[in-house]
Image 1 (tube, each protein chain N blue to C red):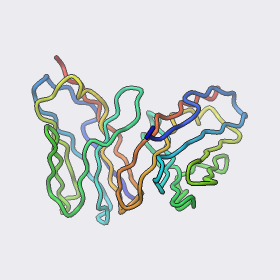
Image 2 (tube, each protein chain N blue to C red):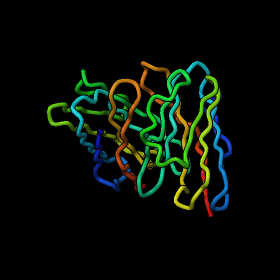
Image 3 (spheres, rainbow over the protein chains, first blue to last red):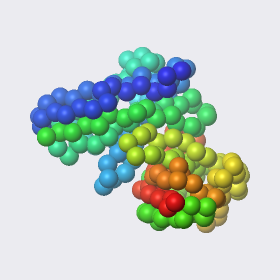
Image 4 (spheres, each protein chain N blue to C red):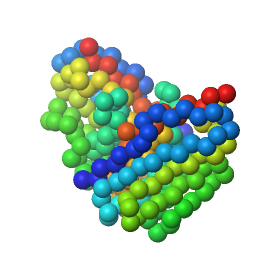
Length: 113
Length: 111
């Protein structure tokens, strides 16, 4: 198994642009998580899906952020419009519900100028 | 919600010595306590975890202890090696999913 796959690995965009981050979880995993990592705030859970359904989005910072999981093998995190303070590393992680261990993807380093 | 505090923020040890990182949590309902290691520019990876029905768990040079009464847990690394240099995160969570992470400890092992 290739593990959790994220794309792109690096994204540089200008303020106001739309950004879409993509994630493919490990096959067979039914829980998916989006995290944001910054020096100031550390690792923050943004949203959690179980069986493709958003269960907890209390960590989504504001309406500019949205996430979808149209099927078991694909999820997106969208920021529209992007702002410089959104600059961070965004990780996607997946797990098999009931087994706790979350496997992280390589992350997307987002820079908003 | 859960609040996890982690100390120290940085730790420098001589190769071969032990390293200890401590975390406290606020929600007494939390029952799952993983530790992740993150090397520079890499993803966090689970190194050990403990559940609330266990007080101590060991895996080679790594051990974790849990004190549910005091709501704190610790990571112990013995016989440190240069490859142990990384950022270590503790986390606390309830059941399957909601992990709250500590701020991280940057461990440097001096040769």
